Image (cartoon, rainbow over all chains, first blue to last red):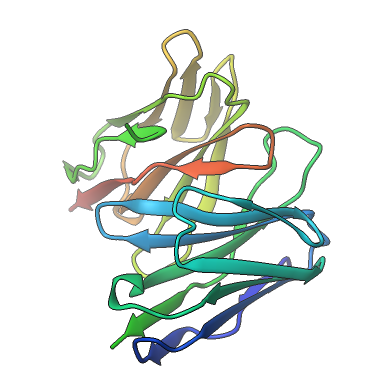
Length: 114
Length: 109
């Protein structure tokens, strides 16, 4: 059974804190993604990575950074959390090479910044 | 302009109805197309891929029109369990996957 696991389902952090969201996949996928999902806006791509130590900005990278030191792990970092980063964060992974490959999602982390 | 646009709905339909969702995409380099389903408070899951010739999976039919950059999903004989948000998805070859904001469907008895 394929799996993408996010380290926390719910997090509450204070404004200004540095926040780490962890994601691990067991499918040996090359590509990993971080999205945030907000009502009416859908899923918006923050960053993606197509290989170890490689990263590309998505549509809304401001205020975020990422780390991919190992193929199975992709971390999202909020350098200094702000209230407008309160959201649902979803990690996904996907293989490369074939067309129409499925993206598998983690269960999501609901982050509240107070 | 968003790269993938969908009517947010909600669509409220009775059981047994046929309902259609549409989606437009702006990036002509898009290579792959999908419909995902997301239940309330759950992660998105793949419903079906969309192929150029159109494809069917049981009660679900997907169509792609590359010239108009348009994707559709048709659900026949709607069930209560079809109630969910349907996400239109495109990508440019696996590196950048773009999701639409989703269309909400409520099927009522």
